[in-house]
Image (tube, rainbow, N blue to C red; front, side):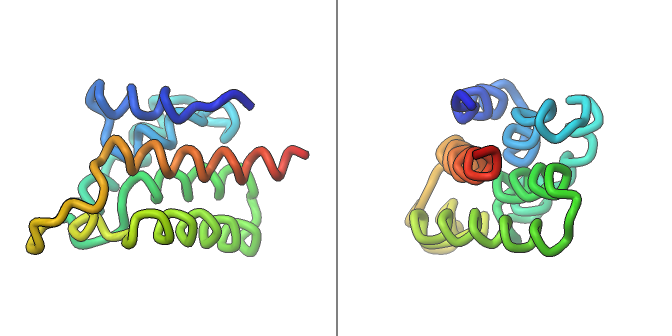
Length: 130
């Protein structure tokens, strides 16, 4: 699979939220049309609307995983893999912490979070297709 991380970042730059940017870049693999995926993931922006929760880019990746796997146990394991890699690289999975709200220390910008989640999702999908 050629990388879709750049496509995801471009979607983010064009107005998609972080969850939409990641998830909509994999609609064909997930077996869903882009408008439906965009609607499904619209409430997962800004750490689920308030910056207090999980980064939307990770949620977008997890949505794709669930649609691809169609299996609860496999989806949990795969989501954990992506989340673990993301946290190891960026020190957090919480939007507020990533943006430096309260600390002034930005750990990762949104476009980079989108790129990271897409890269980790692709790695996982590539492993599954081998």
